[in-house]
Image 1 (cartoon, rainbow, N blue to C red):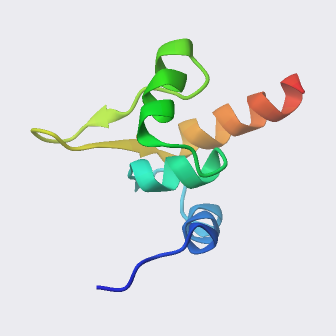
Image 2: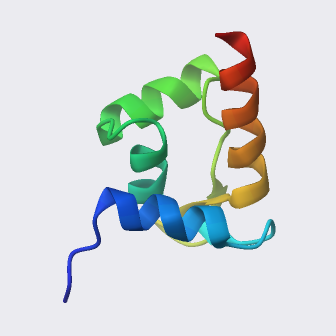
Length: 77
């Protein structure tokens, strides 16, 4: 299986529909290639929205909520 680069993940995110879902590797890339631990730390602090649980150990983020969080993060700086 081909490994997808962070750049490809971000490009896919930018062209995806608002109602789409993404996994944690895309969230990591969007916030600057952060670790999984940092993703969960940012969720607890409110910097990243909570994911949607879609199965036993699987969760995803709705693209529209991530775009809103990124927009808000950009306006805070």
